[in-house]
Length: 317
Image (cartoon, rainbow, N blue to C red; front, side):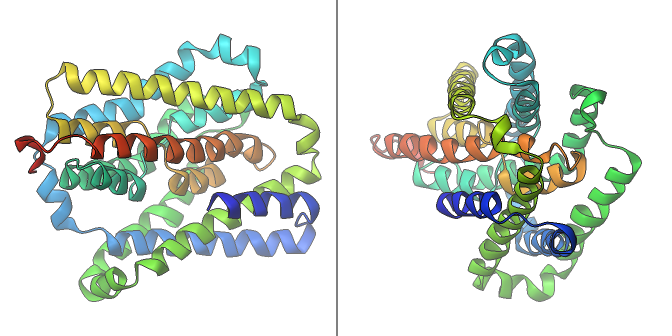
């Protein structure tokens, strides 16, 4: 996926979509995003959510880390970040801090590290669902009006039509197509990745036409990578400390670390498509794209370290 993202950015930089092609691409992208959330609705098991929902302390801590700790850090360190990044890129950092957690990779890393997988399924799924509502609200509160971002009535309706209704339709249709979707997980993954690649290509095409790469020189890109690494490091340290401070078992700690420190590219790209003005979307999603790749690399290393620990009775979750 990292290589495909790089290829799409390169293609958009050399052959940006313009005019009628860009208009058609926008329609195709909206359809793909709707199909994506329909399939996610059909894939998500209500039983898995109910099974993990009783662990409320764990879920509350994950949600607080996702929707409170991240935004507080972004706002607290704003003066320092602005020494390294432009105001537009800082808005991208702030936007990624307002997003929900990932679903697939959070669960995958939790399983690889021998964590509490049922709780991870519940926590990551609830975070993703709440993000459809909470992220637009947080964007309206935290991001300045001058940025043009926010949850206007039109953007709220767009989220309902493009994300929420397809998801609900998928949940309703699960009783008929759930088994088929479970047997064809590669289809969901393909639509997931395809919709992200389409939105990224569309966003970067528009930005390249407006001179994106003249506004983000190599030195600035290096600063952005550094900020993303530092943000992830601080969050993971705080989340791990909180999990241990409140006495969670090691499997629960693993779930909290992986669900509470990650941000969703799959949800963030469609939300940016709705909430962020077209002229600014590429600068906003660039930090998210970089942070997503960094979190995958770091979490893979940490999952391996957790997995090598001795087996304990608490691991039998």
